[in-house]
Length: 442
Image (cartoon, rainbow, N blue to C red; front, side, top):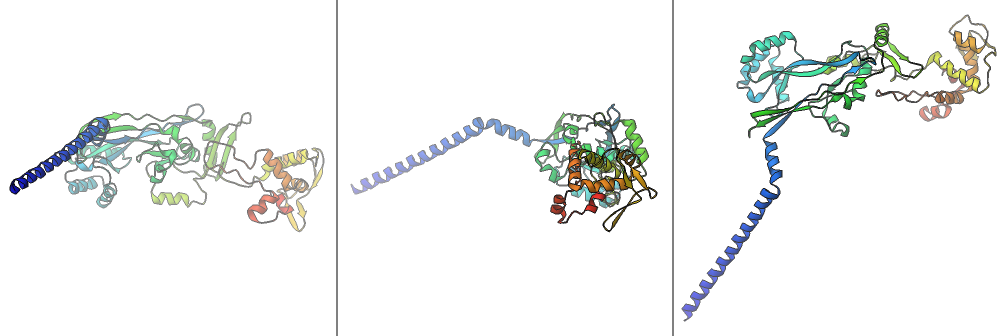
């Protein structure tokens, strides 16, 4: 009887274990079914898209930038096709042999070509690497004749900036260059990709978003190794918007011709409406050097030039205005009733203030003159006299009323508003007193 009882207990224990195992298996199957339902039904669309995206790769196609034109539609800056030699590494069967042949064919350093390839090896295998930019027709012909021996090498046509008039207006129109990794992190450049060209200075920079256009896309189907296996779907690039300036083409050309061998700036303004008809800054530079990637040697020669060719001297320099400021002094003196137009003031070859002596540009000046003659002949000693009467603070007040010392709002970057001094501002900025003699130099 005891033996029968033990057998029943054992059978009962086995049955309980089987039931427990069945429950566990059922629970696991239920979890699996729920998970499959979630993955296949609930998130099916998401994972389908992800799988599809993982099977395609995108190459961006650079959009041509918009043109920069004169007020009448004459081209200052446009685009031209640049022929570049590129290579897709995954298609090169014998790298050493083919790269050595390419270097010998194009008269390039084999070591430098390998260095360039190594620098870009982080790119996906389907992504082209540019080996030579903006090649000549002679180089293009030589490549085309031998391309059967260069599997994976091909000609890539990319739009680059074209400057029909070279250095003319370079500081106004600006230059472009490849977007940097730092710029790509900026919120304002969120629409760019790593292969883009952007405006760095001038109108190219100011109107970057308008000139840029919309890049195209080439979608390539690839296998698990990232190698192209299927057809491509191309989204064509859209050219950027054209920018019409207020510049008069003939006047701009004449101004540059007159200033070409000098250092300085010319700005021609329509007095009726204030629009700029010509703006020239010299010496200038060739913006094309930046389009194709400027060399260190050339860059150093530009930035180390004492005449500052990159600077737009018309709006970025802050210089003493010279005799043009006599108009401000005249207006201030008349408005404050310190002089009358016909009042004659003795104006000799020099003007003495304390121990300081200030000279007239004409050493033979030695007579009484009124305001009309003082302006007509630019009599320095006359304006030294009225400058002492006005004082720097009142002179500065009238200068500001005329808009001096403030930015004009011109649509060009890095405008310098200049500095209109007062006693307080000079002390705040330079921790120095303002002397009466300083007013005469202002």
